[in-house]
Length: 399
Image 1: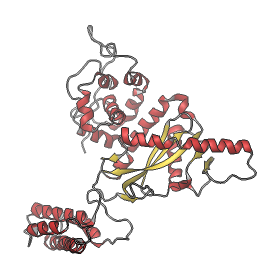
Image 2 (image 1 turned 120 degrees about the horizontal axis):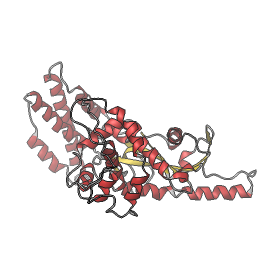
Image 3 (image 1 turned 90 degrees about the vertical axis):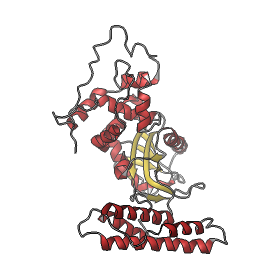
Image 4 (image 1 turned 135 degrees about the vertical axis):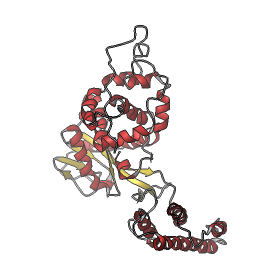
């Protein structure tokens, strides 16, 4: 693992005699205002211990890296795009602590990947905590709304045929890497089978396509077994072969199936949507203040029942706010618990006769207000990169 020396932050009190980047910008611009509200020194104090070496090339300033991560999600940009646009945008440079315009990329896009791994999930929670603090009293509301959504992983829609063909390609790549001569490559056979697999939903082609699917699976199994025989006893492909065997053995109704070879932890989640019956990724819990509209919690899960995600979400809220909410309003998917610690969980249900008319009206209003979290989740997905997860593994899901 590479350990970098931390670069000293640029001095903000030394400005150019003729030009100052901050003085030349519109002070009403949202990024200009946000740059003055963020406690950048807190990030310096928290992340400085992660740079524990006095040797080697200096790392990039912490404010620059944190600023790029924030801009990436605020403006819905990829790592490559945010680095490219930084060199063209004065407001991006001022937000990241630059005192003069620099017509060059601030860093390589891969350095954002290394920085995310360096700060981990705790560092990303620290950025979320700072975003709550910036909202001031709006983030201190004692009543919250809760909901879950699915963040899809960046994989193609999984089918058995796709997995088997992908396995065949990987087996051939392992054979080339280890210098193993396969008994047969099956290249021409697979081309003929691909023709037979076309239009497999047509009644006339159904039987022929199913037969071709079974043949592709057979070829994949042959190549896996041939590699197991010919690979040396000590090799570095044990995890791949174990994954291939699981794919070959899994049946239609099995639990914990493999849906992607490069993202084997992906879950199949059904939220009951009419237009999209199944989604492949992980579940995300969002906490949202009832009236002020501040996101105060975001936590990744596997495929738990919605009611089982509340405890973890409230634990995260306690870490971020050092307190717990009084009331959480959720939909009927959270049925099962009415109280977690000192927090009351409210779910739409027929009112008790003991409840006064005033309390009934107040409860109804709160449940109607809870529906406001739905469009907020839609904006997170469409405008702030929550719709599809391009990060790798369980760590990427948590980030």
